[in-house]
Length: 256
Image 1 (cartoon, rainbow, N blue to C red):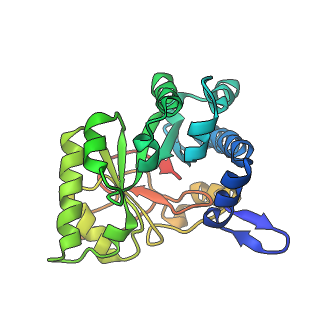
Image 2 (cartoon, one colour):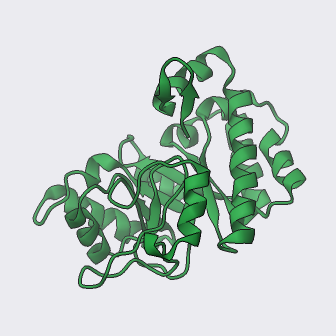
């Protein structure tokens, strides 16, 4: 997501989300983003890919201050008639480390609704491994600080290998964040990483541009797994964010 400001131009969420969190507007912003992203996911499910998914980040502030009632976004999803498997909610480790009962109730609301949960920026916190064991998530996202340093023989490569193995043993899918070089992609494929996102696979774009990629064969959009290093390359784009593509799992499309 980007904010197209009339004065400052394209503003990244890293700049305006902290302000929204501090002044309380994050709830309205978060629900608006959820509604727009869910509605767009439904359009692409009908016009392009029946199993299309959109990942949506949810602020820790929304979990702490929404009260005891189910999150408003679940009602929005019902009003749209969107299936729960069209949405993935991304949370940070700080959310699941929060001992506030309201936070856990909200996470349980999402689980009961059938929405998948992804643990973002994995590996940067203090007790990530312990939280994987105790909390029911579906997807682990390896932080870009590890991905950016992987190369043959590097410690970061060993760490990524262990994260992927551990996650798979727990029945979780793995996404590598911040893939920017072909070597990083190839090494992650060899490790069996399920999905990847980063500028190598695609850059942020508006929904209108994303639509064109489904209708123009020359763009290289492909719905099967990404090939091994010896094969030709196809990527899967995502709107207004880093694009995310399958590194090994067949016939899956996900957008973030």
